[in-house]
Amino acid sequence: MVSRDLSLKRVKKDSKKRNGVGGGSASTLIVIITFMIVLYILFISPEERVKLLGDENATSLSTINSASGAALLKASPGRLIKEGAQEVEKDLPGFTVYSTVSAKVLHEENPFVIKANSFEREDKTIEFSLNPLLTRDVILSFNANGKGTMTIRLNGNKVFEGPVSSNSPPIKLDGKFLLADNKLSFRVEGVGILFWMSNQYEISNLKIIGNVKDESRKKASLTFTLSEDDMAAVKSAELRFVPDCIAGDTGVLSIRLNNELLFEGVPDCSLPNNIDIPAAYLNTGENLLLFESNRGSYTISNLAVKLKPRTAEYPLYSFDVNESIWNDILNGNAKVKLKMDFIDDGKLKNAIIYVNTGKKTISTDKAHLETDITSKVRQGDNTLKIVPESKSIDLVSVEADIVY
Image (cartoon, rainbow, N blue to C red):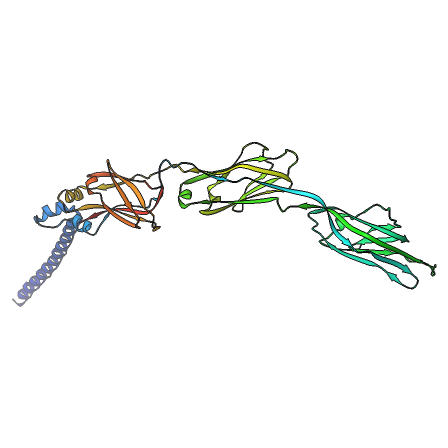
């Protein structure tokens, strides 16, 4: 009997354990199903959620998101150029560039005496300066009265040795010995064993003469000014001129714009010459043109800088108005506003905004502008294009927003 009661108690206890395990599994399953239902409700469309929950007064998620000013479009157009920009021509005055070579007296010396005997010696050193790059064919001329062997040295290099007279020809000073600062020494040889005699020269009318190149007019500079509007529209430029010169008798002509080399060579004499100018070489404000000739003469006429405009390009932007937003617009609960940010230059900015088939004109001198384009939009795909009426506008950003 006791054994039977113990068996019944054990069976009841095992049954309770099994019931406890089964109950825990069921609770877990219910939690998982509930979680899946919540996720499903969160991810279905707002309209279906309203129908499912049976709350016709519930605010749709699209309205909540749109109320925060969700953007339908964001873009950065940059600089926009007015279509049909004309070529601009900057006329410049003519001029002449040339360099000449002429004989010039580089140095003159007062009369002096050089002598040598057994008791004394008297030499003479002359100092003179020149530009070795611009001076050539240098000669030494003087009148001499006396006797003996004269030695002349240029910067320590012997250029003459021998007797001289008043009829002696000029002495060439070799260009390879010439420096910017020079020393020319005169000396007469001694008498040797004839100690009672003396060698001596009286020198007068001494001149050092050379052919000197004058480069003071070999350069000419001109300036022209470009406005911000000019620079905004320019794609490239061209330099035009007619050089009056003699072919074969002129040297190299170099032309620089703002220190950038445009041309270096011999142009076509008496004919129009056209040289391309990259837009990158041009500056807003002052531009410096420099002409330089290394030989001969160039007279420049019909000089002009011609600016070639860029082709106008206007990006076409697109944005989508979905059914939910469109219904809000139709019900008067939402508007579409276009927000534009410009470079704050204080200039008047005129433009036409094309939204689909409609258009709207704007005009402002402010850095920020907002305008309502609700009446121009439609459900589904929409297009936006901004065409400047000013010569150019710098549009930093454009944004189409839903506003509730």
